[in-house]
Amino acid sequence: MRAFCLVFMFLLFNARLTPAWAQYHYQSLMNYLENRMLAMEERISLWHEQSNRYNSELKDFRQQATDLMERIGKDHGKLRLDLDGAGVHVERVEREMDYIETQNPPRPCTKAEEKMVEQEGTPKHDRKEELSPVTDEGASGGCVDIVSSISAMKILKRMGSPKGVWTRDAVTAKVYMFSGTEGDTVHEYSSVSALSSSPASSRAISLPTFWNGTGNTVHNNQMYYVSEGTDVRVMKFDLHNSSSGDSAVFPVDDRSPVYALNPETVVDLVADEEGLWALYGSKDNINLAKMDANTLDTEQMWDTGCPRGNAESAFVVCGTLYVVYNTRPPSRSRIQCVFDVNDMVTSEEAPLLYFPRRYGAHSSLKYNTQEKQLYAWDDGYQILYKLTLKQKLWV
Ligand SMILES: *[C@@H]1O[C@H](CO)[C@@H](O)[C@H](O)[C@H]1NC(C)=O
Ligand SMILES: *[C@@H]1O[C@H](CO)[C@@H](O)[C@H](O)[C@H]1NC(C)=O
Image 1 (cartoon, rainbow, N blue to C red):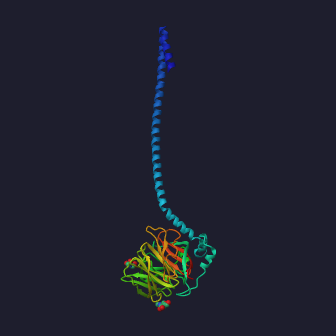
Image 2 (cartoon, helix red, strand yellow):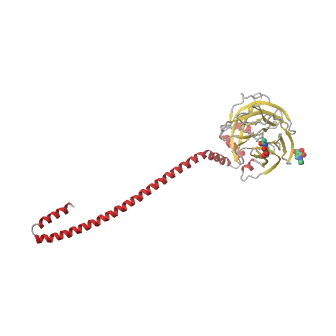
Image 3 (cartoon, rainbow, N blue to C red):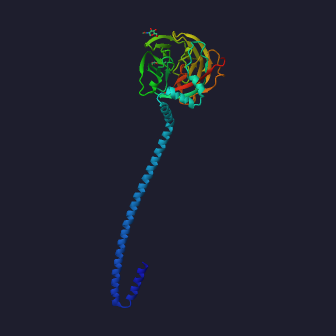
C-alpha cells in the first residue's frame, strides 16, 4: 500500500512538469488505479464470502460440539444410573454365583459336601466319625450328642416362594418341598440329587386338608403337618399308601407364633433321634412338647425358657432344643438358647453358634438324623448345614 502511494505521488509530481506527457500518464494512472481498485474489490468480496463461510462453519462446528457435549453428559448420567443399579444388584448376583458354584459337581451331597468340609478346615479324623451312620438305639439311651459347631454350608437350589419348608425323610431318603406358608400340595423328589437336577422331576401330592405355616415335617415315611381352621390340628399322612391317618387338636392357648420372626407358624413339628416334637408359643416363651408319632398324643410339655422374641426357627437333636435367633432386617443367624429335656446340657455349656454366613432369614430348619444335617429354607434358597456333634459331658 505504501509503495503504491509513493508511485502515485511521483506520478503526480511528474505531471506538473510536462502537460501532454502528464495527461497521458494521468490516464494510465487512472486506469491502473481503477484496475487495482477492481482487483481489491474482488479480493475483498472474496474475503467477505470466505469469512461468511468460515463463520457459518464455525457456527455449525459450535453447534455440533454443544450437541456432542450434551450427549456425552447424558450418557454419563445414564452410566451413573446403570452403575448405581448394578451396585444394588451386586449382592443378588453374589448369591446367584454361590448358588451356581455349588451346583457343580452334579452330585453335591456326597463328594462336594466332603470337599466343602475340608475347605472349612475341619480335621479329617473328626469328619470320618461324623459321616458314619449312628446306630439307632431307640427312644431312650443311645443318643448322647450335642451340637458343637455348624461346620459347612451348601446352597443346593433356589426354587419356590421366599418362605417354605424342605426336608428329607431319614428312612426313605425322599425329599419333600412345601413352598410358601400355606397350601394343600407338597412335592416329593426321589432324592436330593433328583431335586438339584434340572428339570427336577417330582410327584405332586395333594393332601386331604390344607397346611399352614412352616411347621411341617416328615418322619418314618409319615408326613406331619399343621392345619389351622377353627382349631389348630396336627395331621398325619401316610406317604406309603397316600392315606390320611390320625389327626389331633393341638392344645395351644392362643395362636401366638412360635417364632416372632416367622409369624405364620403357630406350631412347629420337628423330628430327631427320639421321635416327634412340637414347638409352640406360650406367653413370651417357646414351649416344647413330646408327641407320640403314632397316636399324635402329647406325652410331655416343657417351658423351655427360650424367648419367642427375635426367634427365627429351632430344631431338636438328641432331645436338646436349639433355638435360632436373628434380627430384623436379617443379620447372622445364631443359636442363642439351648434347652435339654434331660437337663444334661445347659445354655451356658452350649457354645453360642453362628451360622456360616448371612443370607436372608430362615423360615424353617429341619434336622436329618441320618446325615446330621439341617435342611434350611432361606429367602427361597434351599440350603444344607452340616452339624458337628460331640458327646454330652456326662458320658
Ligand atoms: C390356612 O390356610 C388356608 C388355605 O390356604 C387358608 O384359607 C387359611 O386362611 C389359613 N389359616 C390361617 C390362620 O392363616
Ligand atoms: C396305609 O398304611 C397304614 C400302615 O402303614 C395302615 O394303617 C392303613 O390302614 C393303610 N391305609 C390304606 C387306605 O390302605
